[in-house]
Length: 224
Ligand SMILES: Nc1ncnc2c1ncn2[C@@H]1O[C@H](COP(=O)(O)OP(=O)(O)O)[C@@H](O)[C@H]1O
Ligand SMILES: [Mg+2]
Picture (cartoon, rainbow, N blue to C red):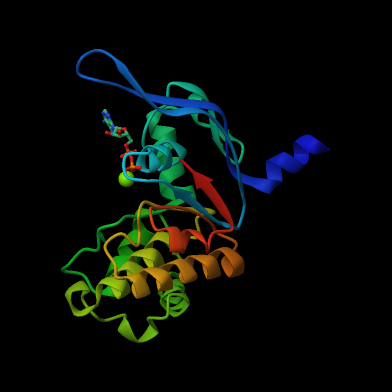
């Protein structure tokens, strides 16, 4: 009974997670020291800490982008240490969405084309046009579909990047300092959008921030 609950309740779990880097002088720098995390589904989860505290390291490990030294990490029932690089790549493509600090939209493509590119990369063949309309609506930019990135503000570009990251309906979205390049107000809007996505679309959002004020909006806060 309890086992079954844990399987459905959490999106990502870690047990005894250790991550260290081997430095040039041969010594080890331990960044993540035996972390046991239970990250609930459909919530806005923030990883908070000063620069150098290991936020990027943690989000990269949780999203299979980086390896770890000890312990275990799982997305739903998939145990990372049992997966090869190809399986991890497939997991990222199908089950995860990514948003970064500096928006990686393709400048020669409109907002719609950028989102469509993401959908095609994720292997979505049917209903793309309708889904694009839907996600543009969700991020509040229904009227901006034909705009090129350069015609959008920083905050708007980040919202398009979020629309692209979630269009293929991944259960989890990873965002490393998604508000880091934005002014306070745009940053707040992004965090509010994430909160809505978690609540209304049931997507689990795992993001990093060093902004104490934004951290107050989190459903769950991990301090490093
Ligand atoms: N590839 C690497 N090799 C060695 N040390 C690293 C590497 N990447 C990060 N670090 C170190 O690990 C610590 C955590 O870095 P990072 O996860 O980027 O922190 P944050 O994102 O919180 O600023 C820092 O001390 C950083 O210098
Ligand atoms: Mg970082």
